[in-house]
Amino acid sequence: MKEDKKYSNIELFKRFLPYFSKYKRILILDLFCAGLTTVCELILPLIMRYVTNVGIQDGVSLTLKSIIAMGAMYFGLRIVDCFASFYMADQGHVMGARIETDMRRDAYEHLQKLSNTYYNNTKVGQIMGRITNDLFDVTEFAHHCPEEFFIAGIKGLISFIVLIRINVLLTLVLFATVPVMLVVCKVVKKKMRAAFRQQRIQIGELNARIEDSLLGQSVVKAFTNEDIEKEKFEKDNVEFLGIKKKTYKYMAAFHTTVKLFDGIMYVLVIVLGGLLVINKNITPGDLVAYLLYVSTLITTIRRIIEFTEQFERGMTGIERFVEIIDADIEIFDEEDAKELTDIEGHISFEDVAFEYPDDHNKVFHDLNLSIKAGEKVAIVGPSGGGKTTLCNLIPRFFDVDKGKIRVDGNNIKEYTLKSLRKAIGIVQQDVYLFSGTIKENIAYGRSDATMEDIIEAAKKAGAHEFIEELKDGYDTYVGERGVKLSGGQKQRISIARVFLKNPPIIILDEATSALDNESEYLVAKSLARLSEGRTTLTIAHRLSTIRNSDRILVLTDEGIMEEGNHDELLSLKGMYYNLYQTANAMK
Figure (cartoon, helix red, strand yellow):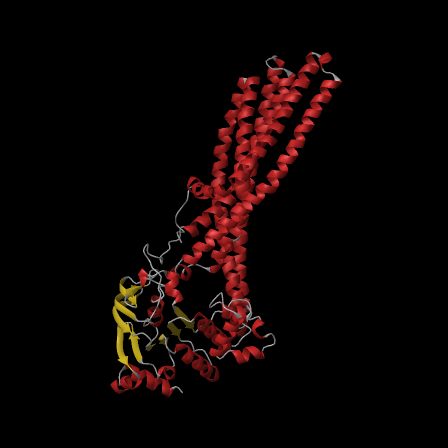
């Protein structure tokens, strides 16, 4: 994520404006209604000017009929104003909410395309904050920003024309204060923008802290570290309070500045206007109209300046949204990528070099490996040797820096990501089950699966029996991350999910290492059935689970040091032999 990049308001506007295109009709009608409400408001000073001047200069002309006519006209304008205001408040806000929804959808879709590197370096709480809280203010911004500037433009222009026609000197003196006010407000606004951004970042940190603590509740309780977690939370919470205090300080300074200049402008009208009336340079009716227009102008300026607070909140939300959209998509389909079909399952690594892009930790250099279609290959070796990394390169969770990985003779980059990953089934040690039912979690392997397909997959995975014994069977709620099930049960459901997917290539990443002996035995049987007739790569710490593999690779940070079947590697009395002896000694 490009955290260090600073976006100007113009850049952010350019990125935001296309979201209005779908709602041009609503926007045009909204601005038309805004124009109607503005005209209704600007008519009143002219009516008061006419009544005052005629009443003072020629009271006979001011009849009951003319007064009622003006009242009726103004009441009619107010009715129009009410309908226009209703449309603005209703459909204007709906337009803002729709734009917020579109932006959230785009952010989520972009997040789906980002690589593992992005997620390894970005807290989930921060991401959640960006696509939820940060976009809340966009609804108000999208609605009010065009309205406020459109209304301000009309009022400012009409007020200036009317005021300068009444008295040039007073108008020029009055408008001379506006640039000074804008400059002072800009200085405070800059600090307020920075405080809003800091506030957004800190709420993301707070979300991440809460998420981390709540998801790790069992560990917290096991180590009786509730007090430590409270202290961590309190520290972040108090820091957030400090940032909000700073934000409110700048907001208070901002509003005080606006009020001060309001007062200065009214004083100028009262003093200079009074002198002009004394010198008969302006009529009392003109001064009344002038004061009403100045009041309208000041109210408009105040609204625009006070809208700055909402403006800055909205721009901060847009900025944080743009930072997600600008996060590089590192893994993507080539222009001429084709579908991977009729897969046999032959895999080869040719002079592959790879280092992690975030920490530049070199894992492979000039790695060569060939796996036959349907072959069962096990990978063992010390931690940090690159076993999981090797398997993650096949479905392109990361891209190689040099060399090629081929499936059925073609570079995997020639295939679409979707078809490549569809051809690969992965069973990991750390099983992730989604919050929902067992049925929904198994069906995640194939969205169009029937209930019969789901049951058949569960039977193959050895999960059907224990599922039937549960109170709600396949409709049993598994809890968040599957907390209501044992490790062995979760693992068998994940295997059923892969059975349902029915891929020709299987990756088993230490799928039994965290299980007890009984669960390991049951899961191992399920995995054996899953591996039949498929190209299978198994990462294992427990060497007893891979004795029947067609080939075993001993992988270290120096590359593949030994390969062969179980008996061949034992006869070498090398690294595999030592690993096997150590494993037996620990039994």
